[in-house]
Each structure stands twice: as structure tokens, then as C-alpha cells.
Length: 241
Image (cartoon, rainbow, N blue to C red):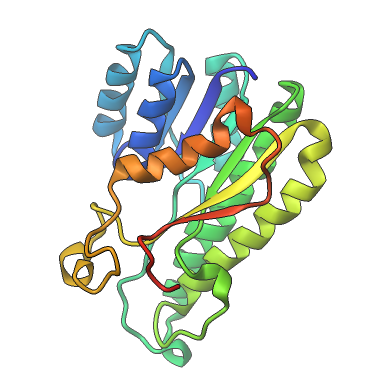
């Protein structure tokens, strides 16, 4: 498998940690950002310390045309593409009940999670095929596959459940092209906004480290995982079981 990766939302947080891990394993990496230009450029410089090519690309991937341009620019800058990791997805902090969610919040959450993943992945697939195989890793969240009712943040769970179904459908379709598609579903991570409030209620009594989430992503990207596709791996410390 060729070693060229695009990680969305990789200026900071989980996305950055994933992109740097791939760089440490010899992947040329495109760091994507929307507003955090300085952080993305700093991440690029850190990645280059591993002796790989690294570029920073800006795009609002809630727009399908800009998402497509992001992928095309990554392919041009890296000379191809074999791995796509989609980490972008806003979490609404609104406590509105399901029947009272504003139209604006609904669209923001669905667009940044489900639609952005769809736009980027759709644009990337022809390039993964051209690379004679590759990896797609999308991000959902713990318990999204359980189809449980929620009083709040319903749009977020709908979007993440949609990502799981979308990814499974791609997995079935693309295995003939040597492309795997899998999902990583974190629970509360060390950089979550409500980490202190929730950590004590978790079965593990602590949040996931970024390194633990990165390890799950790498499990699917690892060349030895070419037979594993359509799977959803939770990194949640027993949350919502």
C-alpha cells in the first residue's frame, strides 16, 4: 500500500495525533484545517521531522465543492492518496430537547459530521482505487450503533449512526478494489469538553487518551489488516455497554 494520507480536522486534537502517528510510520500526510492555520502548519513541521512530506490544506468541508478541492489538492501535493481518515464533526452543546432543536443546529451537526464525511470520502475513492487499494477510517461515537433514544443531541447521534451505515455499505462495495472501510467510535477522550464532569461516571473511571484512539485507527490502517472491513471499534472504556 502506498503511504499517502489525508486526515481531516488534523490541526489539533485527535486528528493531529493520528496524522503525526502516520508520519512516524513513513506516511506523507496532508493536514486539513478550516480555521486553525497556524496549528496546522506547526503540525506539518513536526511531521517533517520524521522525514516525510507534509502539507497543510484549508477547506470548509461542509461544502461539497470545497471538500472535493481538498482531496484534489492533497493528491496533487502528495502525489497520490491511499488513506483517508475523517475526524471532523461538531458536537452541539445545546441542551434543547429533540422536538425543539433549531434548524440551524440541526444542519450544522448533520453537515459537519455526516455530510462532510460523505463529501470527502466520495471524492477520495477514485484516488484510492488508482492507488490499487487503500484505507478509509471514519469517526462515529460510542453507542451510536445501539439506536437508543436521546433526549438531547439527537442530531449528533443520527449523524454518527449514519456514518456507521455509510461506512459498512462502502466496505461491502469496495473490498473488491482492495479498499477497506471501518469506523472508530470514541467515548469520552482526554480532550473532550466535558471530560472532568463525566470521567467519574465512566466504568473505566477515566477518559480515553489520544494515544489509545490513535492505536484503534492504526489497527485498521495497518497493512496486515487488509481483510478487516465494515467494522466499528469503540474506544470507550465500557461506556454505554
